[in-house]
Image (cartoon, one colour):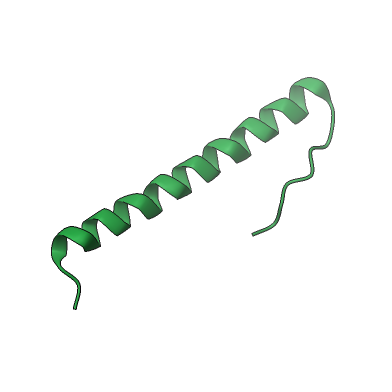
Length: 44
């Protein structure tokens, strides 16, 4: 069984990953718009 602490910790890490991914996608979109290039993004 998982303790509440480690559950919260794991959820926080997942949220962090999701946020980083969203930021990376946003950055990629911004670069593509500004530079008019296509940056291949790795599908997960």
